[in-house]
Image 1 (cartoon, chains in turn yellow, green):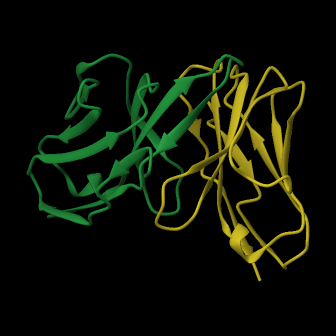
Image 2: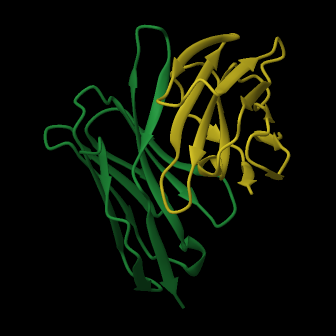
Length: 112
Length: 114
């Protein structure tokens, strides 16, 4: 069975641009969460979606938004990119909201 | 103060050694405890998942949770060069909104030398 898949793998943007990252959960998983991992640190929680509803939001500015589609895939959008947004963006899925989360390999975003 | 503290290492051991990795936490609401392994340029891979205090064993890996001391550990027996990676502890609490989030430690970089 396929694991969590994320696209694109790498992305280079400039300050002020907008980016959309995509995630397909493990088949049968209904919950998707997004995390930001800066080099040398543990992942930081951004959002959780379950059954297409936002269930939690981390301490990130309103420039960050997300949504979950009827097929349980998800998008993370970041507007007005800053240099500090350079990071590995990880998507994790779980069967339901309180079950173990399994991660994809992430999208590496570089802001120039 | 961080909710989860983890010694970042780096930790270097010879092949066959027993490795001990530890995290402490301050939030009493944490109920679920996990260890993830992350290879370079890869996403975290779930190794162990525990709910209650006590020990859980899976092959060469043993996870230990002590809720009274707010302390969790991961032991790796007979360590192999393939165990060389960053190990992340993670914890979660459940919300009334039917949500949860993982709070991670900083990660410990482990190298097992042949």
